[in-house]
Image (cartoon, rainbow, N blue to C red; front, side, top):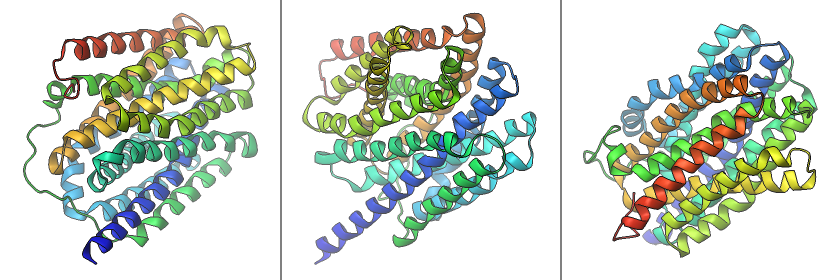
Length: 390
């Protein structure tokens, strides 16, 4: 009876987390290209657009040190509810204060709340799943998130990019994201011991995972924000640019679960390197496929799947190796690394596009992907224990 009740509570919590993240992801997918396209139509320099896209990283840095304390004090459910409420309020300030420098400030808050949402939900899932199906469930989590993020840009052709309409749609989905959390009770960490590493020592504890998250953050920040700009500069319409992001998201949705299945069946680090190779190949082929019609969408589909599979593998490996406070610290470290990438990649990619218009976009992806593949492959090959490479 007790085991049945525990299983029911776990299933209820998983359903609530998945539903919450799926609805929140819709707003996440809408807001990034929406803000970039609004600035592009106003003639703002691409380097400034990239800088604006990097502002959420400041929010990540500010929020990261407080997440473990707040999660332990409030519990995961209440902390997620608080983050959603703040996020909704902040999003509605963009059309109210229609000024570039105010948007910089608001972007920091959006980054902080996104960090709180993702770190807490990923920790919660890894705490309650079994290692035998960890990869598949993390793949399902990423698939739902990718699906929602992919659907977000489709709002742009439907309601446009001007006025209150797109922001109200995003706020509505944030409100819906809070509802499933009401169905589950507070959940606290299973262990309260002190972590064996901190945000900084994680760089030495898991350097391959560090490199993987930095590469993934390139796609999530510079990719989602500046791919629409790269596309329009390459001759596509605004609607076509938004559809490209959707196709990438569909690839993530479709391939996340199969990549999680592979991570449960084979060496998880091999899956991680395989996904890195996919990211590199996609960046190399992108400029040649822009006028290739169906082949372009096939490439974007596989490209999105490679990056989604990479993050699925990272989360699966973390859940396999860490528990309790170490698990929270590891996930918070990922958020911090994602913030570093958010701060560095968008302005760097924007400057690269200003120098080489618009070819600097794929060149940045080629360089970063190649460094990751070489580093991760080298670490894996020289390691005696292939299952212990971090």
